[in-house]
Length: 93
Image (tube, rainbow, N blue to C red; front, side, top):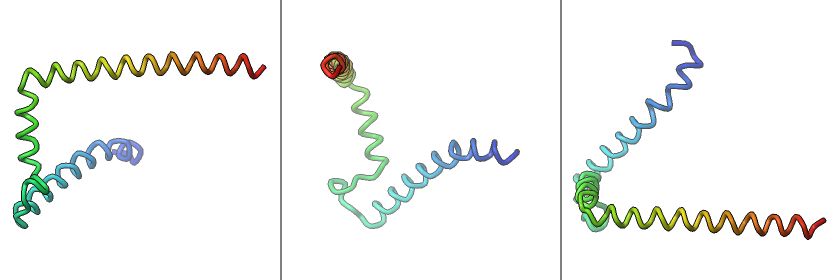
């Protein structure tokens, strides 16, 4: 493999590897030091809870409402920004 291709592919290999290593170190450290899950929960507990929450139907309806609000807010903000920009451009002449 030539150097350019290796430099292009390397981040796609090292980034997930470092993330997995971080989770492993985090899990081991929390268990070894017996840190309270209220202070610093282990990643396994976080992923378990995430799976439970994503399995509930109400979560998806809340996500849908949030995405709609984001899109409406972005649209209104973009429209207001364009209007103000055009008005400023016309006044500045």
